[in-house]
Image 1 (tube, helix red, strand yellow):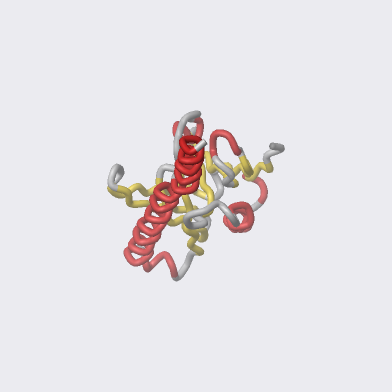
Image 2 (tube, rainbow, N blue to C red; image 1 turned 60 degrees about the vertical axis):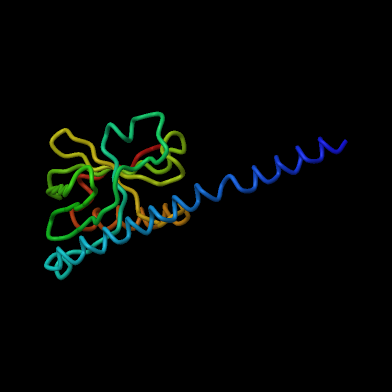
Length: 172
């Protein structure tokens, strides 16, 4: 009986302590992303005066379609909306600086919503321009809570900026 009790308590400790390193990693990654976004905002101060800015997470088409992944996004950055265009800036070690610019009149924006597997509980929308698909979700920090309303707000801002003609409401 004694060895079973010890094994039981070891199992309980393992189950309860296992999430701590993962949550610590996720929290640290969210803090690093926030600092990078703050740096982008500081470097592009001129855009702040004329365009709305949103903190977002980004996934390329390949990343979004990949089945096995720990995080559904590749980078965090700032999405600027206004003046008839959408601009995305990110700065991650693997990419140095990535900037994407979309003309509001010629790009297509599609609301995807939640795709729990394999893209987590985040709500997504895509911007397609020149045959390339780019996926965005609101940056909600370390957890997914609030993803849908914040992502909807970004989608609505793009919709308002460029008109309904280029936007498709997904039926998913």
